[in-house]
Image 1 (tube, rainbow, N blue to C red):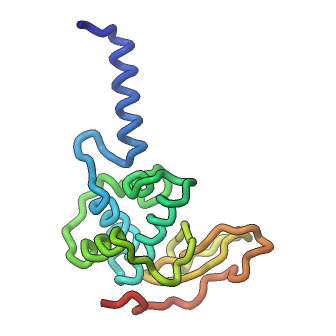
Image 2: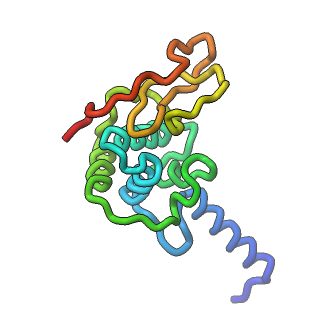
Image 3: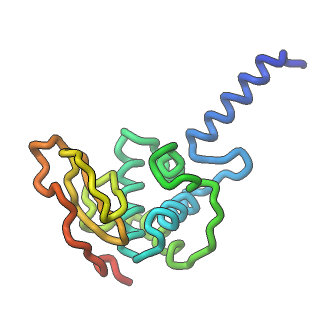
Length: 166
């Protein structure tokens, strides 16, 4: 059976889109553990366990929200949401990152993260009036997007560490 070239191109294009939306590359399909490790490694800069658990909590909040892809790899690999090259950059194996990722995948959440699905580097400020900050840890400020009338914490609180200790 032979396929016309346009049909083959269409099939290949669709396959590429499916892999990209799933947060996977064509050459290596990352496991949920690997994707979570990548988010923690590149986004929390391995600064603290609290920072890694908070980043992982945001990933899980997004995956369970229905507003973002429904898998860890889908969330982490979503274009424009996390660090550039997060799914393709080389990273060194780090037992602390691996432990934190396993823990979040087993259900641990940062107790102060709540429903936050967003974060940015601590120290940066934005003029938006819908950012309700819940936590600063691990070099990041975590927040919920709310109607401006419901924002009661419009500036990041002081940084806190040692909450998730181990």
